[in-house]
Length: 276
Image (cartoon, rainbow, N blue to C red; front, side, top):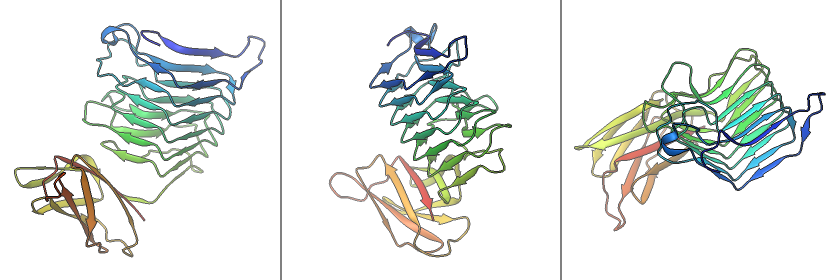
């Protein structure tokens, strides 16, 4: 789908009967030229139950969006949706927006560079009336402060949602409002660091750690708060082809980066996430 306001639109019958069981799979949506007319949103559902949205690519082009902040996936008054393994990129609006939507599962989606830098903007926006939804194992990454600096916002009137083991880099952690909502996965440090001119520096909204370059391709990551044991889990990704974790201690660990020849080489950017 190219240059459309929304690729797939569905709304309950005026008599109040919901739409059921829609499957949206394997599509690619792109904006019109420059995003000036339509942004290439994938779905807008109102009163749709048991829908599945999976394996789609939503935008992903480096376009400058100038007209609308339509989300890639918008769910209004829906029940039991499954939004799984989609790729979102370069949207002016959030990747997903939900309101009065219940008992859904949103997992294994990849979200890069979405939303605006305006206050309150988010990569995933969970609005009033949402409950019983699970957001799990989504990878969310912003490459600069010009995009939304909130990863997931649960707004006032939403409650009893779960946010579990989502990987977030370059944006703030989950912000929940509901007293019965759960944020877990025990993320104790997350973000990224850069290495330039022999100096390592934290990148954007990194939190829970500091970093020091000790030698070529070698950096020590030090926790803001020491861990109770050394049995924490470290996930890293780097522009170098090989990354190794060594010398784990309760207060720090060492990250080594190797080039294709196996030589220790300073990376440009390393993403880090630590969970207990």
